[in-house]
Image (cartoon, rainbow, N blue to C red; front, side, top):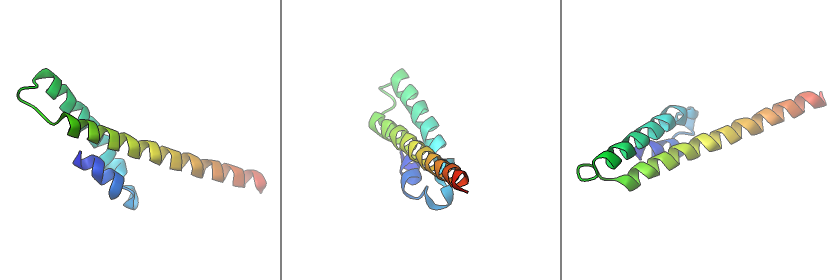
Length: 80
């Protein structure tokens, strides 16, 4: 979850979230698998889901921004 928070908040600075977001996704999925296999030993299902959601949210927003820039560059090239 911490890496998900970092990717959403600090990740926009120098695109640092490109590194932290996939790690948040992988660690969240691994945590969910561990919780599913042994719920008595592991807890924090909400934190794992929160990390996955924030990591995925960063990736989605980043892809939309890249898409918008790409469309802008393409449209600018058509007008020239």
